[in-house]
Amino acid sequence: MKLRHHPVQPFVVALVCALLLAASDALARDTPTMMGSGEVEQMDAARAAIQAKDWQRAINELDAAVKVDPRNADAHNLLGYSHRKKATPDLARAFAHYKLALEIDPQHKSAHEYIGEAYLMDRRPAEARKHLAELARLCGNQTCEEYVDLAGAIDEYKAKNPD
Image (cartoon, rainbow, N blue to C red; front, side, top):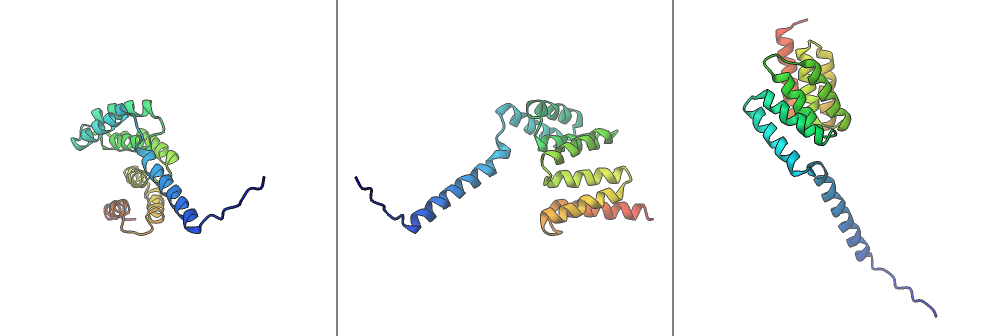
C-alpha cells in the first residue's frame, strides 16, 4: 500500500501558526490575574483600604493574600507601599516586600518606583537613581508614569537636600 503525500498549503501553515501565537499571547496576559476568588477579594479590599489610607487594614488583607500566594508580586509591592505610608513608616518591612516583589517580577515598574521612593526616605538617593535608570530601561522612555513620579521625587529630594 502506497501512501500519498499531500502538500500543505502555505496559508494553512500560516493560519495554524497565527492561531497558536494568539492563544499563547492570550494565556500570557491572563496568567498574572489567575487568582482564586478569595485572593481577588483580598486584593480588592486591600486596594480600597489603601485608597482610604487605612494602612493597617491594607496590611492585614495583603498579608492574607500572600499567605494564599506567596509569589504575588503585586501583593508584596502593595505591602511595601502600605508599610512605607503608615504614620510611623516601617522601612525595613517596606524594603523586604519591595525586594520580594522585584525578585518575583524584576520588571515590576511600580515596585521600582516605590522602592526608589523608600530609598529617598532612607536618605539613599544613589539607590533611588539606580531604580530610575531601570525604569527608563523598562519603559523604553522617560515618560511612563512610574519614571515621571520617581524622577519628580528625586528632584524634590535634591531641592530639599542640596549636596
